[in-house]
Length: 163
Image (cartoon, rainbow, N blue to C red; front, side, top):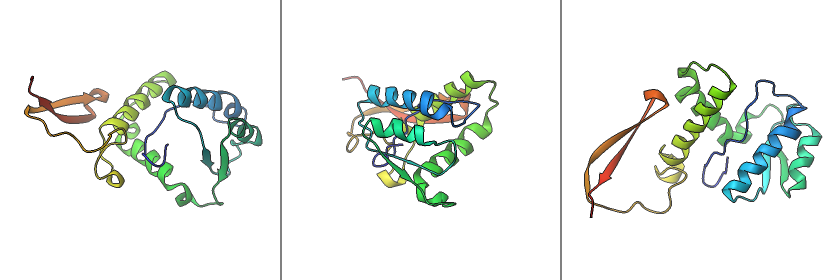
């Protein structure tokens, strides 16, 4: 999660999250995702779980990122990430029947698109993370509905009148 904008980047998923997976697959996937988005990684905040091995930290340091460890037993120290995980579970995962890893990745990609492009955020004056500046005032034809995740989430937008 990019803290300033609250934008979430989905890097990789696994059913077997362990010390061996983190330095190889996770960091490589994260590096590709950041490169595609044109984002320079400045820092990585994570807890002291054993899955974050010194090898994984070295991968992040090798690309110039500072590794910041949260205090022991202090989930509020990384509150933005914890909040996103809770929102993702409450609004999406707990309401879906996930069949396999590929299905989970598709669900998370769709939810991340919703979260970044449409979901209002109080810290951003009810604008989504991907919004730039104030919305332009335009003449509209009416309100339209866009369905995501098979109807689990409905997004509403104003359809502009053709000029």
